[in-house]
Image (cartoon, rainbow, N blue to C red):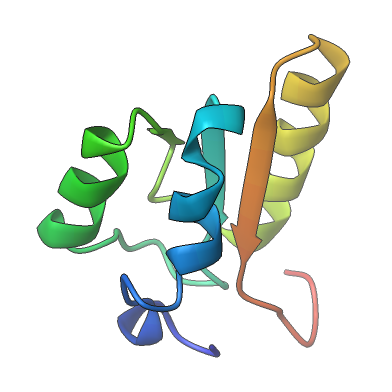
Length: 86
């Protein structure tokens, strides 16, 4: 995936399969500030996964992921790669 619009439930199937082991999912949405679709957010909630700051950019998601890890939280990340940092 290279844009937030390409994120689908099918693409998140591995995350949903491990939902019982994930407390928080960090989603980094490239450089642009945007959000996930309502359907995806609802599906993640139904599986008990908290989506943390879904409107954040990839770099911010990585930093927050590291903080949550240091707090001993069970966290996963779905990150859209960026070619350069702003």
